[in-house]
Image (cartoon, rainbow, N blue to C red):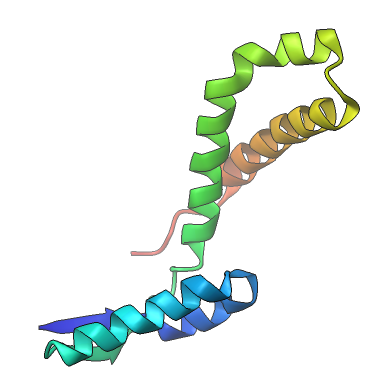
Length: 108
């Protein structure tokens, strides 16, 4: 069995990844090696776009689940931080959709 590991991407994400997650990734790779897998580094040029795609999906799903609460939160003034977060979320969703709509298609 051959396992592909995008080590460059793991290294790129390391500064913003919890140390325990990085440790578990290394442990998993070591375990696979110990079970006889051949581990090879792979390069996936567009992998960095996964972070953007994840953000678009996450914020869209969060907004869909909470948009019915938006008017109530804003109306009843549950706290400035909550209102600011909600408005920031809406702004973030709009920006993500806008940037996604204007991005160029990926080359094949």
